[in-house]
Structures are given as C-alpha cells and as structure tokens.
Length: 277
Image 1 (cartoon, rainbow, N blue to C red):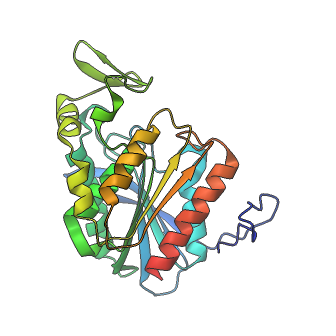
Image 2: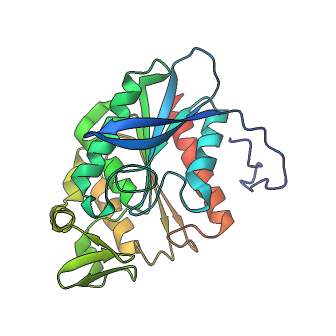
C-alpha cells in the first residue's frame, strides 16, 4: 500500500509526505535527436533498482495532466522502484517536430531510453515495467509485444484500440482537413495515419499473453470510449499472465476528478510493486 493512501484508498491530501526520490534530468539520443528525460531514483545508494519507463499521450509530455506521472514516480520511489519519464521526439522538451510523430518513431524513442538504462548500473534490466497513457499506452504495448519476456509488467490508461472503432467520428480535438489529420490544430503525417489504420492490436495482445497487464479506463471517456476497453478485454481473453481491468465509472479521459486519479495511482503502484519487487 502506498503511503499516500489510507486503508480505504482515500488520498491523504492534507498529509505532509517526505518525497524520498532523487531526480535528475538527462538527454538520451534517439536517431541523433535528444530526448529530454527525468530520472527518479529511490536513493543515491550504489544499488541496481527495478524501474518503470513512462510513455505520455499524443501531444502530451513527461509531466502530464495534473502532474500524474510525477506523482506516480514519487510513489514508486518510496517503494524502491526507479522511474524514467521522457518526452517523445517532437513533444515536450525533446528535439524534433510533432508533425513527424508515428507509431514506429515513438517505439524507437522508448527503445532508445530502455537501451540507455541498460548501460547504467542504477537500473536492473531484469525488472522493467512500462506505463503508458492513451497513445503512450499503445506504444508501451507495442514495445512489450516486440521484446517479449524482457518486460515484467505493463500498465496502461485509456489506450485506443483501433481507428475503426471511432466509426468515422473522431474525438473533437482531431479532424481531417483536405486529407490531412490535425490534432489540436497540429498536422500529423500520412505515415501516422497509415500506421494507425494498419494497427492490429489483437495480434499485439496475442504476443503479450505471458506479460502481466493492468488496464485502466474511464466510464465517461469521450476520447477513448468504452468500445476500446471492450476490445482489449476480448483480445486479452485466455491470457496466461495476471490481468486486471479497472473501469472508473465517472472518469473522463484526463482523470479530471482527483478521486479517480487516486484510485488509478494506487492500482498502478500495486501492479509494479507486486511484479518488480
């Protein structure tokens, strides 16, 4: 149980918490462009820690809405788990252009961060967790499926399953104009559209049957509706590894309500504590 929660999973927002993590920035190269990362270590002791790499959503950053990845990193550090938060190329503080974003490119970025971690004595690469929010959840699942047993557990929050499930009605912040897909007014490449169109998450999930998985979804998510969660549940059927689907009935895509964030933080902490320690 993470210290920021009481026995009823209520957030102790009025309690002073001594954050024990040691954090520092680092530039990691991906295809000759710098990814801005922030590393959280549980202490400065000369140890090798299990670690979680966090993948933000499309157009997001390593800080996230309501500083969710930051709080998650602090909580995991309390339990002896290191984390690495980073910005994909073209997002946040990293180099590159957002318009060049593709599934392949983001997966390369995640791989570059994990390869860098493998060169550092502070990280135990036999105990790797991945966390991804929204589009970042897709990237985490793609990497885990590609790299098999090297990932100990994956936690995802509201990842889309397929463009097809939108039934020609995209979320309000995405639209087509003259055959170009815009995200909050920023253009995305044809390569991004083609890769999303050809994405077969059913096949991806088949390759993850031996990887523990936590999926968190919101019952009032207008960006990634419940149909996507159902598709993941169907694709996960028969998996050999432990699986947990948590639906927060009143939650939107951003987990705007603090009680929903509290529950999501606790469930995610519990996943990585149970699988990495």
